[in-house]
Length: 148
Length: 148
DNA sequence: CTTGCTCCTCCAGCGGCTAGAGGATGTAGC
DNA sequence: GCTACATCCTCTAGCCGCTGGAGGAGCAAG
Image 1: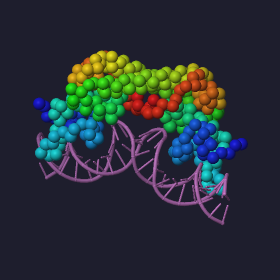
Image 2: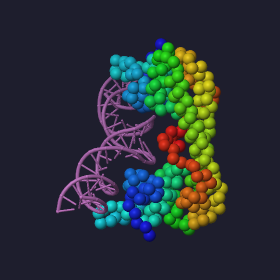
Image 3: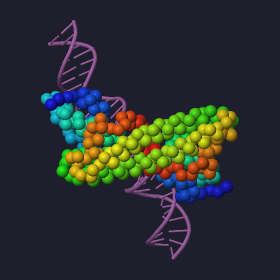
Image 4: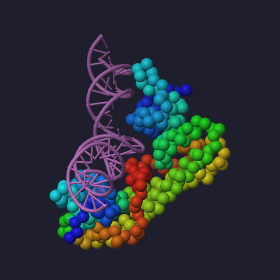
């Protein structure tokens, strides 16, 4: 059973030091042990938890969702439908986001391609921004939250 | 020349009232006139500016970029290369984001499809989160900022 | 005994809003 | 004139998920 400092835990897990402390503060990571000088000592289980959290964050899960997923992980006899639902919801969100971004991409490409590289007075980029009506696709925008 | 209240301006521009005030505060929207009771009075030009800002925000431009774009709009004799560069940078960002999200989508689909709807102990979703090595695609993650 | 490294806690800030308190003013109906 | 209600104002604090800095403690090596 390795016991390591926060610095080592950060290196091993890929989670930065202040972020580790933050996860502890918000209760995502259970408070690790301390040594005689009040320094945190991380065990194997803490590292696994950090890796889990990091991976979930990379996949864009919100902290609350991760909390639920971690709780589930701790109770292996539960049905996994809750975990499945969270992942499904996240997938739906990602799909929606991709759709939005593809519309933006088309819009931005039209703006950039239309640019004659002259003066602002005849700049397609500025014109398009000023007049939504010139948009290639109407339906960009109105995303609520802003992850990934 | 119409002169309207903040409520009307919000309705016309699609920008919410507190957001309009916020844009004024951060200097994105020049401070509009006031009436005898210290209430904001919005003119046509203000509305156009609000529409410009809103459209740019929908396309995911950052406030600083919008500031530059608005400055450019105000000086039509300038070359539009700066505006072009901002739009290009935004396009590159959108493309990168789409790539990330497609990787996430694949990853999430693998997780969800692998789920046998049994117990957490054999849940593909939880397993995959716990062990990055099981990922279909390594290269998800590490996006810096989180818009759209 | 000093230097340098790591650690601790606490607090402030990022972006882009959003929401609420607490108060002033305007308008409509009686 | 009075009441009710809508709208406006300013100011402050909160959202998410961190990130960074101040100020201080503790430990090892030279």
